[in-house]
Amino acid sequence: MTRSSYPDVDIPELSVYDALFSGIAEADLDRVALVDGPSGDETSYRALIAQIDALAGSLAARGLAVGDRVGILCPNVPAFATVFHGVLRAGGTATTINSLYTADEIENQLRGAGASWLFTVSPLYDQAAEAAGRVGIDADHLVVIDGAAGHPSLRDLLFERAAPPEVSFDPATHLAVLPYSSGTTGRPKGVMLTHRNLVANIHQCRDVIPLQRDDRALAVLPFFHIYGMSVLLDYALLQRAALVTMPKFELAEFLRTVSEQRCTWVFIAPPIAVALAKHPLVDDYDLSGVEVIFSGAAPLDRELAKAVATRIGCEVRQGYGMTETSPVTHAIPIKGDIDLSSIGLAIPNTECRLVDPESGADIEVPSTGTSAPGELLIRGPQVMSGYLDDEEATARTIEPDGWLHTGDIATVTAEGVYAIVDRLKELIKYKGYQVAPAVLEAVLLSHPDVVDAAVVGVPDDDAQEVPKAFVVRRAGAGADGSPSDASSELDEEAVIAWVAERVAPHEKVRLVEFIDAIPKSTSGKILRKDLRSRVGRHALT
Image (tube, rainbow, N blue to C red):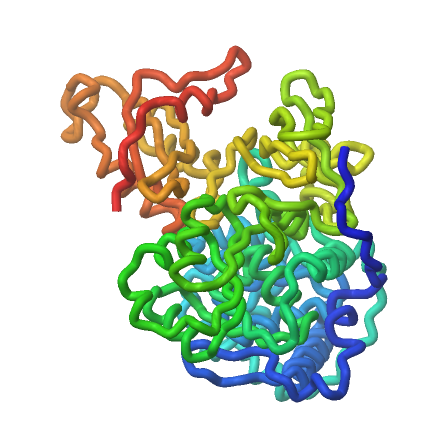
């Protein structure tokens, strides 16, 4: 076991709202809190706090009670901050939803979280309204932020000017957010993160991610994802930095925004690093204001990190974490010479163990060199309280003494530098998004000509992970229904199209291989390692 080499930090026993805003200095109130990247419109800390208070008051006046669940289906726009923190300020629990989700997927999350409200925007209205109707959210509780006939808008709620409610709850136990994660295996589950979890993690980051009040941080990574929610939205506000929002990633717009807004910190996932290293368009923009590019959500390759650092002329670092850890547990310090392909050092107040996945024995930290690999376990104040309504999954993930199983295989050096070298868990990280194999396998198995299927992550040309399906076809039925042998049946394009019609874009299967049988253990568990060892092909575009 190792404890962070950083000294512990004090974690205030406060709600997220109070931790961020209750002690704000008068001099900071008129500083810029949020910048809308496309338009350049700015929101001050004073205006943001007033909007959060007004929304909390309106929600309480309309019946939102402490503990009520509120869905947020919204891209990265400044209003997201108002809605998210307004819900928390009123004592509600926010369940943030992937903006790419289909109506079915939105419905599943709303139903699973027990949400009685939903905030969205007009471009996402159709799927939001369909899902809301299915779970019984009425028109008055479906708030269309930018306005839609028959529904309240954010402006409507703010202009009611209701006083913020007096709410009382224990930050250590009251749920602030319910993001959904597949964890180490299976279908997405509601991750129960308390106010203390979120407050702890942003304070733990202060010594490791030195974002300052004069910095401008780019927020292209989605706020619905724990990385964008905690490391960008909450942490930037805690540090009194300015957060520049982008609703989606388009390279030219990304480069224009970074250049014109003079962003000093740019938070990315590895696929953006590929573009920064290789795309000729980068040379057309002045990125000299960038001081740090910080990557997360998926592993960043050492050579790719160096290529970006050389081309942009900045520091490139990466961190590590999980939705279940609010999310940060490790990061590479800005100063110092630490291997860029590692995940760096454990952050303050964090304990780590490496455990042999076969024997369960602890792997000792070596006196010199690098340890043997083992599963990484984490313990600290950022660790979730469990999975919503799933005691079995919680028990598999968190041990009785608080150790959380990450499902990742890591090594540690004598200096306390950790590196992820493999993965026990099944979760696929496609461009930083979580893709649950179980979800895709269920979709594949719904096809009448698919007898069995398994999905694993495989590397593409840029060493990023893409979902690959292994499919066993039904023998004896060709495309026209006539008898045929297996070789003439369902083809790759048809499988890809079938899945694409039923899932969000980031969840699409990118590769298909037809095989005679899915390798499984005697207990029926898919042997994904055997599938990954097969020779793959390049991903389809």
